Amino acid sequence: MQEVIDGRILVPWRPGDAWLAGGTSLFAEPRPGLRRLRDLGTFHWRPVTSAEDGIEVAATCTVAELLSFAEAPGGPWPAGRALIAGCCRAFSSSFKVWNTATVGGNLCAALPAAPLVSLAVALRAVCRTRGLDGRERAVPAADFVTGPGTTTLLPGELLRSITLPADALAERSTVRRVSTHPWGRSVALVTGTRDPSTGRLTLAVTAATRRPVIIEFGRMPFAWELRQALLEMLTCDLLLEDSHGRADWRRHLAVHLAVETRDALAEQR
Image (cartoon, rainbow, N blue to C red):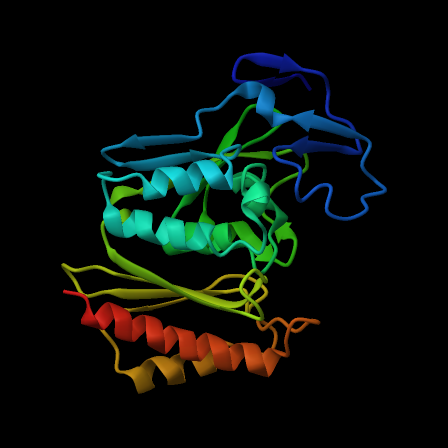
């Protein structure tokens, strides 16, 4: 099968190949099955493209580039860009890594604490993927990550970009996070958005869970309603337990952060 990406014919894919963006995830641990890297940086995709209908972020966009866009003064969608900045700053690494780590790498690594997974889910992003035959798929970010280290990507398929729609960027939003130390990985992270026209509240729980968990209310719920709904939703099979924290502790933190997020959004006018 001939592989063509952006008009460029590539050498055939073979077992042991992997797409390389920033490489901070690929080189973070031993990968004995890896034989050849295929550098996405040679395609020179524009990091961030802003239009009236939203923002397209290339998979090769670095965390530093995305943060710079989000914090640029006078830009559109201030609430959405503040959420983007908050998630970028939730990285458990120094600014030096931010200059290399990429948006696509963070999503494709699919670690529970990956902050750009939280960002994509909160802003209802659509992941644009491309297969070896050139065919593209549009996968909702909420469905992209299926578990720790697993995604819906097919063999040889790459993540080209994520698209953040304008209506999600325009909603009121906030993020709450807990980590064991200031530069540590998140053990619980909750993002929230509220549609000012309908009152719809959407919360996404990550880091404490094996995959993103989304809960939505058509109106602003009472705190006890939210707490009860989350306790029922965060079942043992969804909760993460590892050396960074027990499952029951993570659930407690997730519920606490969700209520804080609900309170913050309820106060916004």
